[in-house]
Image 1 (tube, rainbow, N blue to C red):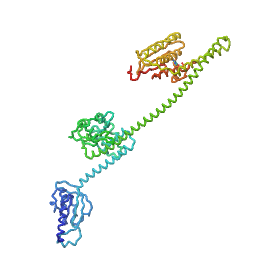
Image 2 (cartoon, rainbow, N blue to C red):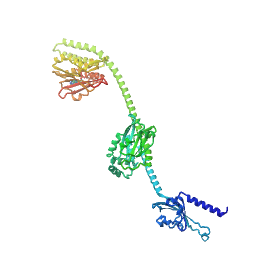
Image 3 (cartoon, rainbow, N blue to C red):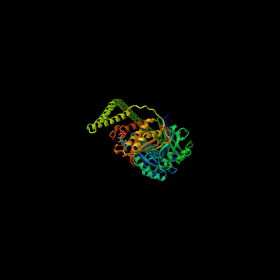
Image 4 (cartoon, rainbow, N blue to C red):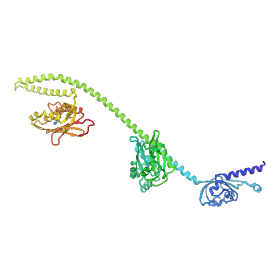
Length: 596
Ligand code: ADP
């Protein structure tokens, strides 16, 4: 093969390759015309590439002067990228990025010029930058959203937000201008107790007027998620009534597995519903939302799906793009993690609280047990001491009375004997009541008619009361209610109340014994016409040894309280505004019994 032939074939090969290239490329000759054009250049300019040969550059570029230096004098700025414009034969003006590589070339036989090194040709690479602009925009949007996701992640995981705050933040990000820019967003969570997927909260304006006002307010607001939340708070809070009305209706049984929302949870993949999508449940959701296109993203955690986010552009009607979906999915994943975390955290807090309570109760129970043991020992000891004191006291009392009888009326010692006798009587009362209080009682309970045992207890005092000028009235109205009681103990309470009422009216008066059905049980009252008690002693009345009487033990009411408590009831005392005191107790109905 001769040297020239080889060169010719190599040049042909290079030209063929150049012409076949998809990238837009031109070789410009010294006259400023196209000498070779690639296929890509033809496509860009709307001509067959061969038809471009011989076309002057000035006829392609706008303005023509932008390329006058290419080719001919090689002054087209070596390798510098220039942003120029070319005209497509269809009329469109296309922004292009141009890179020139000037070079020197001569044709065979053009010997005279072969000596010159001046570049006289130019290889021109063209790039349509319309696409690049679009790509740049997408890249910028991606970057902005990634940065938002990062912020969301920091905000949701870093701050100690409550579940409600997290749900709100999620929806704000879904709709805010700096966020995913959906018009409206609805959040539904799985409610395991009821086996349903249930609407929790929603964000979004109800109509276009509101929308434009809010979006205007929020437009281009700088700042992080928290600023966004606060500014959103003010603008949106009053206006999302309508969407929250919608979200309240969103309830679906989890076993409706064909339903689009339940399916999205199972498939764990975001879904875009278009106007022509037909799937089970879609029409119901369209009815709820009042628009036919929407997106659904599952809130998925490692343990499974905990709910879905439904988002739409019902107000602006804007299409939900692939990019929107991509971010919705990423965002939903992140939100699900935060929601789950917050739920777990709350559960943990609750468990901790329960544990603390259980621990405190155990401590209290232990203390009560120890106190009861101590009291039981004290009770036994007091019973022995009281019992042992009773016989000597009886003897002392007897002797004092005998002494009194044997002493002359005028004898000054008679007064001392009288004091001994009355003090001994007081001590005997205390010992009697004390033994009554501490002696273990046989707990013989039976079903009795409440009014009957209360009436019997009061009747026993009839004669004594008459003797003291006290009128006894009975108003018993528990309608034959029967309760499981220790009748003797309950009668003792009624009697103690009556004795106190009698003692409060030494000059006569009236006592009324009343019974009534009340919520949860029967209330028994003993009302008197005495002076009542001082307001500041109210608390102490039922405490052991509180007495305002010279011969009182202060144990009567304590015994009453103990008996009523052992029946599961409560005692009470108050001064009647119309005069006198009212002492009462309530006997509860057995559990599960219907209220009378
Ligand atoms: P005691 O009768 O031995 O004093 P109680 O425990 O029966 O002991 O009563 C304690 C105190 O309650 C009495 O001393 C009295 O001050 C007050 N009290 C009880 N019943 C009445 C009543 N009906 N009216 C006014 N005060 C009363």
